[in-house]
Image (cartoon, rainbow, N blue to C red; front, side, top):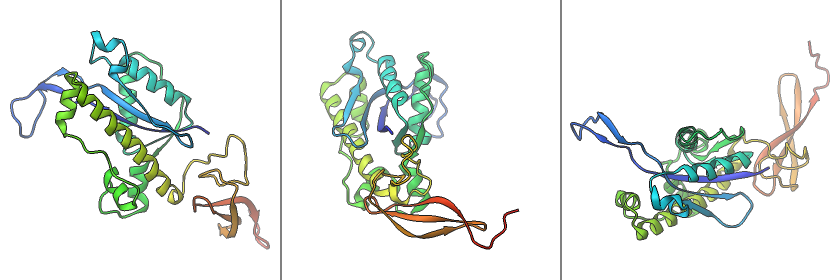
Length: 249
């Protein structure tokens, strides 16, 4: 099963407003677009960055993200599962917005895993931002940058700012992967990655064959064999067994 980890960087909305407080945009001058995105396939080495300057279109239309959106759409189309941080509320919808804007067909259906939602559902971390989670879990931090100026300079074609942006984006994806792997064992409804090969003797979270039986999980009418993965530490349950002496009506 192909699992894509990704993160996008976008521009702000440009528009007119009467005030800097309680702002309401009177008229949009320029709709936001995607500057770049980073991605990697789980289990494979190397993180890749795709940015607007990578395309020939950039020289004539530096704020046209059509080619970038098309590449990202194709990657998602190839995926079975996509992983991001705050991706359910931000990245996934943002990508759909740019895909439909450019008249591209939607990617094939996929399962989505949002590490922010996992953090909120199963833990009481002090902060749920990716940088804070990475620091707390001891797996690293985000790359530093010069704040909003980096985004503005990229919009104005500054090569130094683009190098800073791509480093920042790359580090985000690498940190996302490490945080995801730390949280994955706790995600009780993680998609079963063994569905494609129907391997019932492997961990449904990480695919490892190194699993051991650890008691049973019971419902009111049945019991299931319970397993613990010695690789990722996650728990899972096996096939149904009827409880002796119980009548199912």
